[in-house]
Amino acid sequence: MSGRLDALTSWHADWSGLRAAVLGLSVTGFSAADTLTELGAEVLVLSESASEEYARLVPVVGARLELGPLDEVPTALTKFAPEVIIASPGFAPSHPVIRWAQEADVALWGDIELAWRVRDKVVRADGTPAEWMLITGTNGKTTTTQLTATLLTAGGLRAAPCGNIGVPVLDAVRDPGGFDVLVVELSSHQLWYIGRSEAAGQLVPYASTCLNLADDHLVWHGSADAYRAAKAVVYRNTKVACVYNKADVATRQMVEEADVIEGARAIGFDLGTPGPSDLGAVDGILVDRAFHDDRRNSALELTTVDELRSVGLSAPHIVQNILAASALARSIGVEPAAIHEALQGFTLDAHRIQLIAEYAGIRWIDDSKATNPHAAASSLRAHPGAVWVVGGDLKGVDLAELVAGAGTTAGAAIVIGVDREPVLTAFRRHASLVPVFEVTPGDTGDVMDRVVELAAGIVDGEGTVLLAPAAASFDQFASYADRGERFAQAVRAWIERDGS
Image 1 (tube, rainbow, N blue to C red):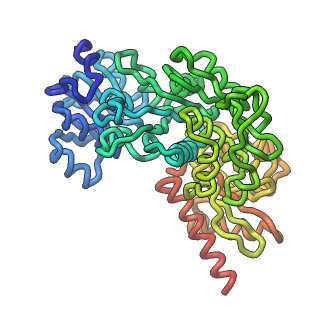
Image 2 (image 1 turned 180 degrees about the vertical axis):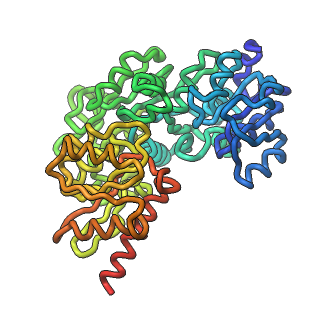
Image 3 (image 1 turned 90 degrees about the horizontal axis):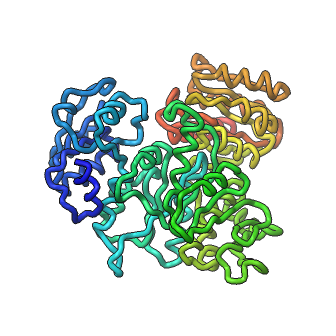
């Protein structure tokens, strides 16, 4: 069986009759099932639940769907005797079905490995498939992925942001229009599945980056070391540029330890003066000294902090994202002028340091996407003295270091979420001078209505209220987007009441 799987490294290989099980039926699971049936495989999809649309479409595309509990190995799976299992990213290494697959020596792929194997379905004019650029990190992945795709497009390349950003890589690979570059955002979960594979067809990215590293998803991975090891996979087999954060020692060590293609360069970025293989800033000017013929004596200007400020992109962590994206774009030849022009028209996603309103001297900032301490720390550094709205599902992460560091700069804190006590304890121990308020589930009204009323009363005169929870949202909200939307709605409702 392994010999057959090793040969499946092309869309045009013989996939017919391959018994493939797909775990999970979200957008990723459906894309895998749809791809495999198109290839001629025999496909069984197993999921605890499914939307009405996907449940209807699975048999339409030619796969079989089994819905039900997956807290133990389903009989339908063992009877099917799969040759390969394609797992959606939510399935942790400790999941019973994943453990069964490993013990039974069943090949275990993620959707990313499947996409890499069939990447030649649509090729470029020279007959080769699109290059891949890989992006990961604890914070800033989506922004950097969007930025990179925007810069590549400005440079005349057909580029698609895909992966963990919400568009399955398999959908991008099968797009009949084709692309020159796929900019692939990867979660640590997806990287864990890639890291397991030593088989033929493993990824060879054109360029790659880990933007930063801080503890996250520790329950899923089992330890901080396992989380770091998964993130480090992003650099494996890189051909041209390994882009790392000079301000984050862990990312440099990843590059130093990575097994890359001979000739790949290590390219650093940070907010300081760049060395000859770096991108950085000099007197408020973002410059490239890495991809420049005379890089030892001069630098190429990309943009200025003042210009970025005029379009809302001057927060320090966003500037770092811009430098990382610029490094990736420059590695494939995008000119500085194209980067400069593209940045003038780029806008951040909703819920990423988004200004909701400015009224009566109060700036209301929605950074609901700051779902971990690293992201929240970046927001706090960009908005010192803000009333900080913090808390939610901590996912096993300790906020003590965040509170003892960036948290001490907050003007006050409003703690939300079901898991509040660890946050309150962190403030008592490490930031006792910061006034702390608590919104409990039993408080009258919606959580965010109460947050906004509290915050408006705390701010005396001018100030900023910052939603940067440093936690997941699922304890009280449907998603980080739902959390941000309800915050924005509460702000607008408060303004309307105050102004009437």
